[in-house]
Image (cartoon, rainbow, N blue to C red):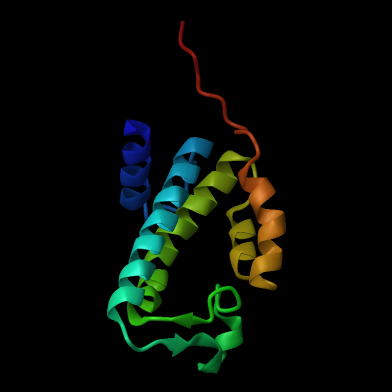
Length: 137
């Protein structure tokens, strides 16, 4: 369980670091944290918020990532998404660097169509590391 907390701590601390690498375990544990926290925020939002916002009704709402998957959200979820966008993007960029790819591939989270880009991006994120740790003798 400690690797989970170390990965979360590293992901949060390096939120604005778009250079370097992130191991597979570091990336996927951070994404697990992101999804679990998202689920918790969504449950709290559902239990407490009476009003929901229909993302597709907003200007350019059809271009909002996850707008097609979860079009009606409460205020907490609407605030959570942009707050966590930078840490998850930086973790994705660092993971792509570790897999030997350009960080620009992270744009597939949102372009050209959010869900379709994921089908190509997720296998890239699962690739093994191109950088092996140096073993000193």
